[in-house]
Length: 287
Image (cartoon, rainbow, N blue to C red):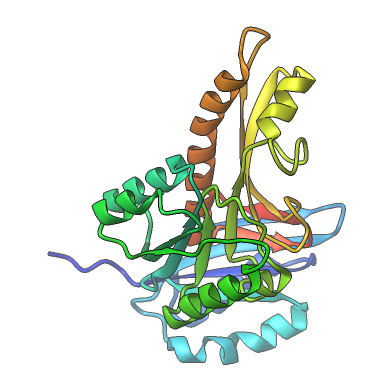
C-alpha cells in the first residue's frame, strides 16, 4: 500500500509587484519542491497580491523547522504576511452549539465520512439537548449553562478546557451566545460562525422573522470568522434560496436550515484546507 505524499501549503499576501509568482515558484524549485496546486489573485484596487501554493515535500530539502528562517528574506523583501502548514497536521476542533442541532449533525456526519482533516476534541453547549449526538459519535460533551451573572466565570472555564485540549479552531454551530472580546482575542480568525441570514442583511437576533416581516424574496446563510463586532467578521462562505409570498415564517426557517448546515460545512472545509486568506474585513477564498 503506497504512503500518502507529505505536502505543505503556503498562504501569502503582500503588496503587488512584478514577478511574485516566479520568485515563489523558483524558491520552491530551488529546494526540491514539486508544486501540486497554485492559485493567485491580485486586488487591482488595493494593489495587493494573494497566493496559495501546495507542494510535494518528498524531495524538499528544507526541514519544517527551518521554513520560517529560509523564507524570511523573501518575505521581508516583499513586506509579506504568510503562513505554512504541513498536510499531515490535523487541526483540533471544538464545536459550540445551543439547542438547534442541524449544523452540528452535518459536521459530525461529514467528519465520520472522513471529509474533514481534523480531530473533534469535544462539544460545548449551554444546554444539555445535544448530548445524545455527542454520545452517538463518541465525542466528549460539556455543558456550561450561561446567565448574565455567571457568563465571565463560565467563559473562563471554557477557555481552560480549550487551552488544555490544545484546540486550534472553534466552530459555532448555531451557538446562540455572544462571545466576549477576551474570548475572541484568544482565537483570531479561528472561530467559524454560521449566521442565519445573508449578511450584512438582517444581522443580530431573529433574522428569519426580520426577513419575513420585510417580505424579501431571497433568504440566505453566512459563515464568517468571529470578531468583536457582532456578525461583522470576514465572510468565508454564503448561499441563498428563493422564497415567495406563499412561504410562512416556518417555511423560511425550514429552508434556511438546509442553507445553514451546507454553508457552515463548506466554510469549515475551506478553513481546514488553508484556502482562506483574511485581508482586513474581507477574505480571499481559493476554492
